[in-house]
Length: 221
Image 1: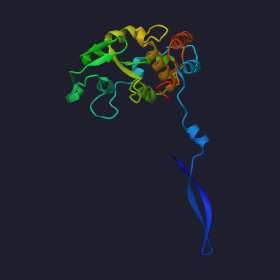
Image 2: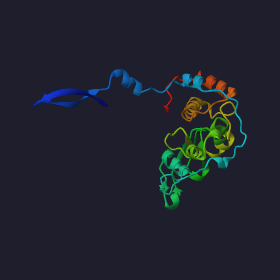
Image 3: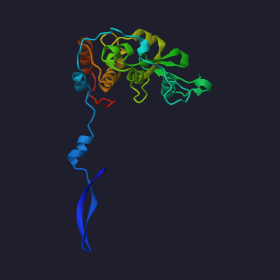
Image 4: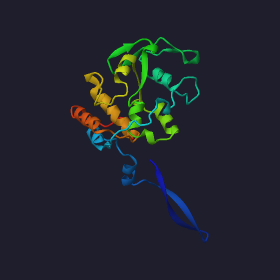
């Protein structure tokens, strides 16, 4: 519990002294400090709608894959290591040997890292269309290599990632049994990065969300 001081005056030998006495944070203040994540349908409803534009987009506008912690493994390999269902051996230069991964887009288990893509759940081009065109280069680099939330980057089969390309949920969805997971993660990423949606995208998100459990988003901010 975080404590706030209050002050009491004591007289000692004719001198006055101020003594700080810790007091608990009021309940109202504690409630304000812990804002729960929104429920899925409300989060969809809250997404701002704009007309998206791809003018000026280049994939190189988002620098990736970088090695932010200088451990020899780029963000791509950090994702592969973190998402393995059977851990690979990590060799020199972050070469991965063995291991297994589950590609949730198409319900496939992959036993070779080279057969996987690390997908930006909200693709770089889609992010550009939705507001990232106004970001500086540093923020775009942060987006392209973001490892703090597992929703952001996902290891999937190269085939499914090629099918998805830079499409939004109005144009492409993974297999039906994971629609709810996919759109919840899509909404969470868009909300976290304060990205907009177009009208067709929002309509599809709302349609799918209406069939899903109205659960809190896992990526809270």
